Amino acid sequence: MSAGFDNLTPDCILDAVESALDLRLTGLTSPLPSYINRVYELETVSGERIIAKFYRPGRWKKEALQDEHEFVLDCAAEEIPVVAPLKLANGSTIENVDGILYSVFPKKSGREMALCDDEGWRRLGSLVGRIHSAGLERDAEHRLKMHPETTTLPEIKLLLEGGFMSPHQSARFKEVTHRIVEIALREFDGIELQRIHGDCHRGNILERPGEGLMVIDFDDMVMGPAVQDIWLLLPDHANRTRREINLILDGYEQFLEFDDRQLRLVEILRAMRIIYFLSWCSTQVDDFKFQTNFPDWGSELFWQREIADIEHQYHAILNDDRLRNGF
Image (cartoon, rainbow, N blue to C red; front, side, top):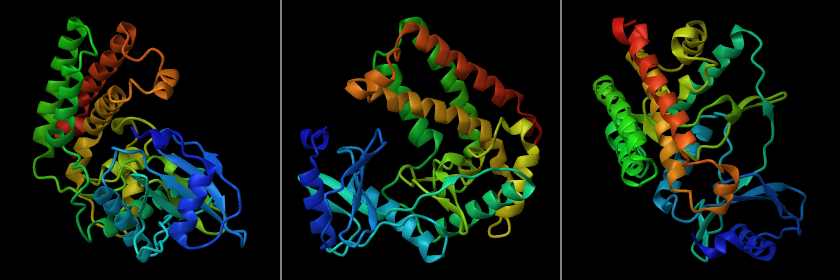
């Protein structure tokens, strides 16, 4: 990790953003919560609040960030409510200071959406359908492809070869994850991958009074199955949320046809997300902030709990009547 990233000073931040935007700022540099990146609220001399995001070195190449920004801008062009990056003086949406890439966004706030009735679920579905319609306009060449072969298998390998588990726990982990992947590879066959948000849980959908819903945080956008942006909205497992799924799809299909075969992937994707998070954590273990936030990560008790959760999810996949019997 760049030492400069850990020691970004207010002067450095202000100088970089003033240069990127070719305008003057006040002295406000208010840090915002973000574990991965460094994010600051700034203020122009005219009183406009803006957000500067300095990306953690080594996480994304510039081309991958450009794929993200292109997706958000495609959504904005279709009048989908998103927070699009500002165009900078260099003609791009990304600048570089001492090897650290950064971008600037307008400040837009909102509150978490309250789901009070059926129409709320349909609104969520309509919003996701519009995003996916824009996502089909082009591919994201430099982004991950959410597929068990290209993401989950390498993540499992990283965890098994990293020495994070005892031999006993490693054997249990290997057995259950490879059973999950065997099913996943079969069920992903023939499923279209497209640009999706990738982390479309309800915390990333805000209600703006008088305006409606707004989607934020496209950091984890991928080429993946459309259902990934649907199951994260659900309050429970797929076989206990059929009503919510149907309501979401009612709204979704006002804008885009949905491939019902993808519903067989919901519990598989839930398992893939557990494995992904464990893999991501394994790359952060030397970070002091991570050690503070996850003090028991990697302990025998930790792996007992996590592997039991994965085994439970494996049985949820096996017991999903949609997977066995179709829709």
